[in-house]
Length: 175
Length: 193
Image 1 (tube, each protein chain N blue to C red):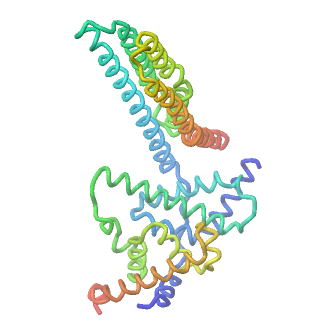
Image 2 (image 1 turned 120 degrees about the vertical axis):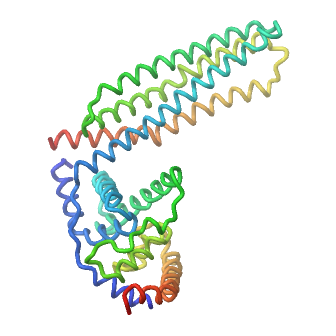
Image 3 (image 1 turned 45 degrees about the vertical axis):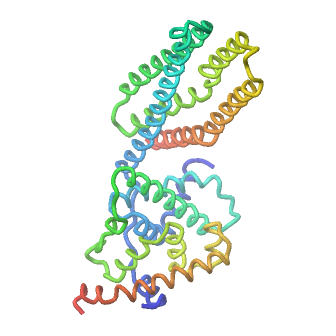
């Protein structure tokens, strides 16, 4: 495979899956600088993975797998680096309002996702993107039954958190 | 809020503008990779120098203080030579670092050069460290054969084999892929002008 062909595939993957990639960036990195950094890392890993893609799974499953594993690895590395330099509360990294155009409920959702463990973040992103348990299992390399159990736990956790946060969110929204 | 409602909120996100690969972010990534290799090299060089100097002093203790086991002086000199050689290599490497400019390609070349130096150090580990260490052991065995416990000798031989295996595993699993990635990035950037 020559470089032009590799670049064409990368551009196509980035364009087709930009929705999920953007959401993954927001779920794993909490500042513009970090999101930029993570995007470069994912693009680099995707670029490197192209020659290894043999078409055994669908291209989207492959992209999800590479992108989310890169994000998990990046996030763990960042955590270790931050832990070395200063001890910070995880939630302090999460901006309450990512953008002025954001629906506060969307910002809250990202905040909740950002507080999950990296593998749970990947699972819930794929669930929200509408992937089946089988596709999630292929993308993340865990069994379908394990996916089901984890998804249920995450859903319950987020619903509970939502109930606990409701008065605060009403106050913030002036309701 | 039930999860189904969260799904509705999630689906309401409008498609955001995609990021573009930008040179500044790529430069930061390359700098980080270069720093990582440099840190690892610093640790290896300083660590090995400390080990060699400490071993050299320890080997000198008996001949100097207790006036016995004069053959240990050979080991002490060998270890000191290894530390000196390592210091010279380190100084040459630090001088080499300054030759690269602070551009993306310059930093990438620096990272590749550091990575190559690290790889060379790992690949020649048996020559610059294990061979001198084995020669010291051999002299020690010859002079103190009767006092030596065979189990200790066997343990030393096994520890040398283990050190070789660990170093080669590190080279194969970490250093070679790291250098290959940096070189691939360099080739890609050069081709794209």
